[in-house]
Length: 411
Length: 156
Image 1 (cartoon, rainbow over the protein chains, first blue to last red):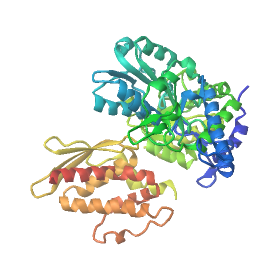
Image 2: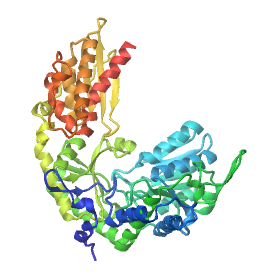
Image 3: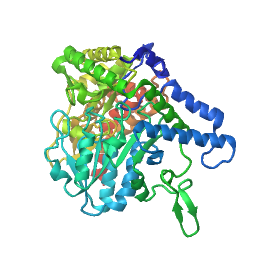
Image 4: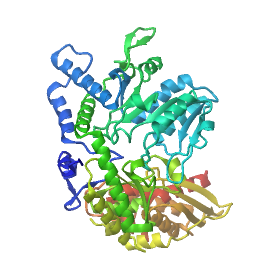
């Protein structure tokens, strides 16, 4: 059973909008941020309209309901991720904050001069820069897993790379190449080498059924806005004993058990890492997002995206031949619906500018992965990325927009 | 507001056939400029003589049609001018970019002669359509910011 995409599209108000004198929006930038279904928008509005109050403090009715709405959402998101308990799920602003949390707490208290952290050449800056910052302070060594020609991790030298390492940090799915990495194998390699593992699930959680217990990572991070949820909410998953052993991150209200003029003690996890009033409406919205994804079915979404990616790779190559390069694995089953493209010699900024005139929304740039761009020999690419609300007509519109760009810059 | 306002023929001409392209050998002063949004990089090499005259300058690196054509037109406008005149050009060009960015939504391009009546930006006026596309302003100013940095370093 395929997805009923024409019905799904109706759930997303932005997709019903038009731009540039009546052109429908062809949204192909979900790896950047996804559109939001009406149910998510309504859940957040309803929270503000009916039970808005601060959480974990008030003794009155709506404060209790706000707390229940937030903690209920935590439970549903934890279940969606395959966590054993909602205590394993810390809410953060986004995946970037989650990684910074790990770097600043576990990293700064466990890493010392000469220790190694292993990253890959396909990482987002969010996985790179926090460790550069720790390196500047602690003198740790960063090692890099290289890539094969078709954009997969080259693990031929992995034993030497992880030897003596304290952490292996990598993306579950590349935001540029679409490559789906062998997460379970890599977390096992890390464990065997005595290293912790940190998995960036930002591109994985929205598109593939995710079970953190099976993936075997020590830390797993994700962001809400790429999975139909609002901006400003994401999370960090780790086992309870891991979180318990970590020092706190931000200090303030909510994260304490007691404060005196001499010092403070922290409260229990996960709130120990959630200083200050949390983004309650966003957490409620994220809960509604996982409800929506669960109702559609993650396996169905994945199947749809494999088919649509296959359609895109096939038809675009047929139409444009050697004029078009699509980076990453050739086989749709080994990749997500993220396609970084280079077309003729047209600069990605110029390409996406012409596409915008056709209502087609693509991201141009380095996609916050400059080391990968350098490895690809490009400063920038244009990137089309798919989700459950895209269909073959959207891919055809992408092809038409490419054709229009080719004609405009035909010189 | 159509694409032809952004991609004027003179812009595409400079993109197709960039002027003063490449790098001057040392001891020419060399500065790299980055557009953090898109990853574009330009390399500007410049020779200023003892009288403060820009004897020669070249632009290398990669970029989109807007950044490359703007940099190309910039080299054509600046070459042979004094460093002080170059700075006036920079000011006039950046004013053209920012004044219009404050009037977003206004389809009128405004009057350039409000900025500096004595300075003729020549071909560069073709770039004023860029301000209707705010995200591309950084493309248009990449070469100019790099030139500013080079002049600052040379006068330091």
